[in-house]
Length: 135
Image (cartoon, rainbow, N blue to C red; front, side):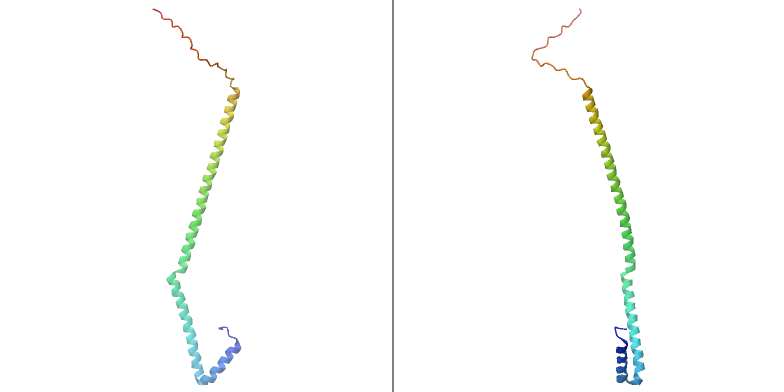
């Protein structure tokens, strides 16, 4: 009790008997007990009053509820962004497949096409065709 051992309490009791005397000691002990009881009750009421004023338990419950809501929202948001990334990668792979197909088709067409005839470039006028007009 209060960090005191049995011998210290015994010494205090002996000194109290010497100073107070045997007739005043019982009333002094009752007064001391009342003081400790009153102090304990006062500390408890102060603690209760502070807890009521601050609504600590309600605030804790609200904070936990908000935390749960935020966790749920962040997990949903991460799922949405993951879906967006997945769709983007699928579209990219489809576009890449299409572009490689188009490139392969153009290569095949070029290979299958007949070689172009070379044309001679001249600056001579071409003769006009004669028109047959029947009268």
